[in-house]
Length: 134
Image 1 (tube, rainbow, N blue to C red):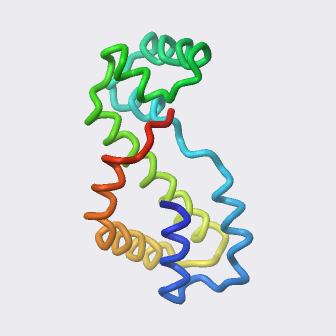
Image 2 (image 1 turned 90 degrees about the vertical axis):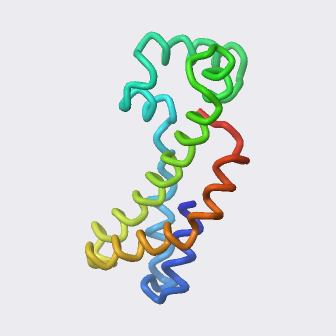
């Protein structure tokens, strides 16, 4: 979603192609793990996260798949967590744009909201078919 938002900003004429390399640097940051998001909303406790992480080290399986297998999260919850993860990653790009002086905060947030609204049906489909990553 970060790359799609960046392309959206280019298409809207908000970001110049010369600005891309700096913004792509902000995109190198790993998205927040879904285990962390689930923990912050009380969907998982610390012991649950540790259980999944231990299994993940053993099985090399995605966090969400293990959490489903262990009965800690439902598939729908994992889908929602992946969607939140994607939105937060794209929001990080909006933050980088503003904090590096390449965009006005209010305008950047308006564009982010427009981007999300335009992609809402597509994101709904993506989140249901996205691979489950931890």
